[in-house]
Image 1 (tube, rainbow, N blue to C red):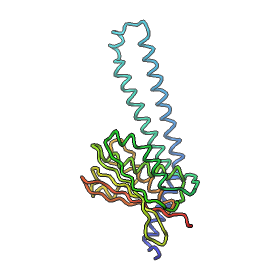
Image 2: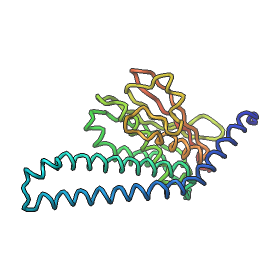
Image 3: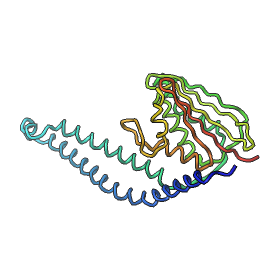
Image 4: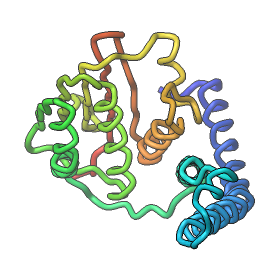
Length: 254
């Protein structure tokens, strides 16, 4: 069935928006990184000045009447942390806005997920989260950029872990969909806090986040990576019971 006009117009608007973001991203990076670097360097110089001041033979009591060195250093550290957060946000924005060079290869989705599970296992154990792996054997390969698709699934898995602050169960499973196109479904299910219905429609919006230190770019980036290889991603959730992310990926024709 051919897509309707509304769907095509929506895709066209999204393509135009991404093209505009791509054009603006390099200029934005230059304009923001220069002052961030300048601030970072000056904070480092201030910290070195305070250390030298402390090491002099001057009366520390007199110095402390002028400035509180410990509080000053603490403020520098807070400022440095905020600079790092801004740089991280900028990097994520660039990843979203710019079309990265993709190196599409055939991948075993089960092996990719096993590697990610092994990687995040220590974090899960520390948070008292049990990981259940249900990977259907004999699945056909997918075609994707190895680094990008790993980044997308790692983001989805870490989101699920963060949704279970008091522990829980994370289920990761793969299955073949009964379809002529022979796609694969990857399901990531947590028993966490869930997502409020009013927020569920916004989770893929750029810069939308309910986390205090969130960038609001993780899910939009994951969605774009998956959409770029003609895959789909959907999220369902129930407050207090958990969230299920379903990713459908096309497979390499035999």
